[in-house]
Length: 125
Image 1: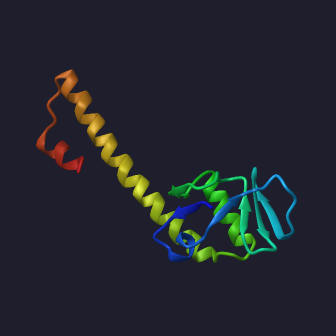
Image 2 (image 1 turned 90 degrees about the vertical axis):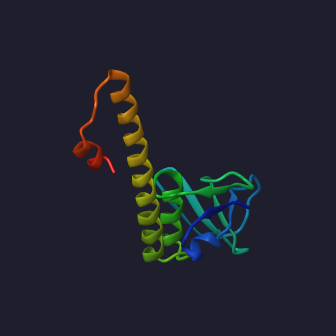
């Protein structure tokens, strides 16, 4: 079983299984891009987007995003919940990127011997 760590409780409570090699009865199935998401007759969610026993963080882009979109199509999650999750994760990524970019800019200006003005330093915050 794998999961996606999320601030949204309904997403945080979901468990995902890798698609098994043996045939299983499925209620519904969909594909988003190259990600297959299936709701098993046993109530489990099977997908090729996860590996076993991993807790994933994030999911606002890429494979996990497609997995969450598939859960909407299968009726497991509401679109509003997935949107909240993706928006929250995108904001966290934006903040992380900004912090990294400021640190990189300061490193490069120091290496080049460039002094930033107080206004420029303030603008970096």
